[in-house]
Image (cartoon, rainbow, N blue to C red; front, side, top):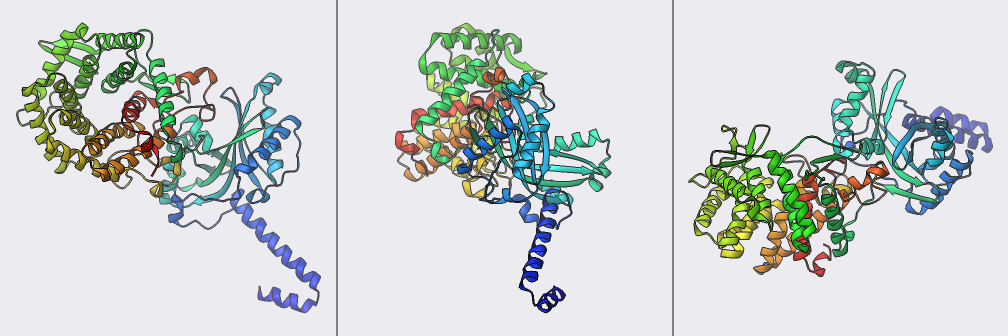
Length: 616
């Protein structure tokens, strides 16, 4: 640079000086852009930035969407470049774009394009994609799924790769793999639409090119990138920005009206998934429009109890008949007797949880007497699993299993609390309190786990309403005060759409799951009511705020409209609408995702007053 400066000073020409400066700047810009967008090596980012999203206020704003939609419409119909001036990154070159052409949710073709300007790249991407389709297919295209990609980052080390390709980034970041001249990219919306984890996409790349693990480690080049996600609806001059292919739900949207709508659409999903023979859908995969054939007796019977809660609100005979058909199916398929004991058995397992929840479903149905024999036999089995120290054996089969103590005993105690509320059986209360003494000490000892809390909270609150037992009250508060520390708040998440879920990445309590959020809300709303009923204003407000945050997370995960179902065939959307995803990056709908959250919301709607939705 000193030699260049000396040269410029000696030229005595202002014009030459300006030209040289401009050329140097242009050369530097070309090198930087090429490194970012075309694959030239660049200095690795610091590991700390791996987990931080790159934000750029100039990449695309809401105010630009109508303009952008007009640009895409023009290109779609005319196949030509049109002037398009957008400040910020889109004035740089080259641009890298992913585009998928969809007809009623079905992706007919997708393609990648890298070119010099936004308009040129869009034109080539659209025209290349249309060339593969016939005229009828082109006429049927109604939605363009577009990812405007930027901020390509090299992943040099195994640690960088591991951090940057974890699930939390799925649907926000895309990635690029290069092996020799072979390049594969996965756009953020592609990962969401196909519901494939980053690990699975890596496996597909390895299988496709028949690479060894050593080659994947040493010869494949890894890069990640950010993507501005836009859905453009042809013929409507409409464009929508998305997060992981979905609309972001702010906390301010958690109102009484929206909570009621969330419940109503979840109810429709629940009853839409009771089949003619009484079978309930266990798990549904929206990306492929197919139902899983796996089963879980606890979750399926809990779905039955949720249906019963809905029917009890309206006392609609038609709904009760549907539930009756469901109970009949479940008993026919999974109930059998062994001597005096009634069993709910699947794949050689008889679980305390399944026995307890099946009994709840029967007990709360108006035609309970129809299944009196089965109820009595199952209750005998549950009683046989209770021990004099207050603990439960958690499996009838296999006899040597006694795990899942965080779940099954709480489910059994919830059943007992319902039975006690019904008849005030003092012997049952004595057994219940013996179990309370055992499990409260067990939990606070070396077994503290959030999974324990909602089941025991609901059971103890139900009995507290009858007994006003002070020890039950204190333990409910002790459990739920601690549970609040597991919830992710707005300022401690990597991405805003995960706020409100109950998950602590620093503690090994298991992965995030919407069914967990739902069951925690079921317990928290009981703790909230207990705090309000006992005049504990501080806890009332703390639990209220946690519930609102949890509701925000649930609303974020619910399939509600054509935006978040953009990749689902229109003919299959009825099976997804109202369903609740497992996480923001995993769209499978399991029955307990919906059931737990619906049961919680029904209680919240009953307990919350208008002012309770006022926010934090």
